[in-house]
Length: 113
Ligand code: AMP
Ligand code: ZN
Picture 1 (cartoon, rainbow, N blue to C red):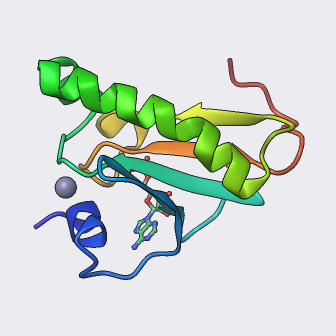
Picture 2: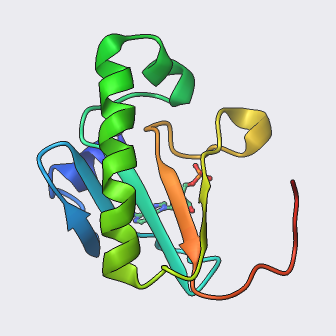
Picture 3: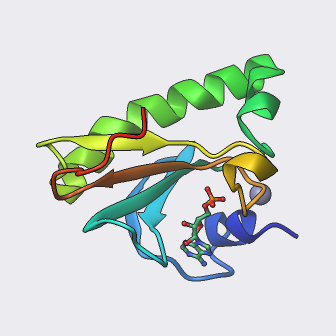
């Protein structure tokens, strides 16, 4: 069982921001910014390395990319946002279904990179 597969399947509720047949975007349950949305491919990949390992995964990454402007439009993050992917333990990945954080809604005060 995978938490985000269950969210995609509608077995666990989420606050949907955008959906098509390939991806789902929903609000993070513990927002770190006024806008904090997770974009996930509906097909399960463990992480971004898993996506990179197949043509299917590369296609799914393109589907996530295409969803970004839709999420920006839906949330009003058009003044700027960050896209974050945490990959594996050292980066703090806690859900092993690849996901991309969209963070925005106010000016970032810290620049990590
Ligand atoms: P990460 O640390 O990159 O793996 O991010 C996992 C994210 O999933 C965290 O920001 C959590 O707050 C979020 N999260 C966990 N469970 C849920 C849930 N049921 N609905 C929405 N977001 C969730
Ligand atoms: Zn999954």
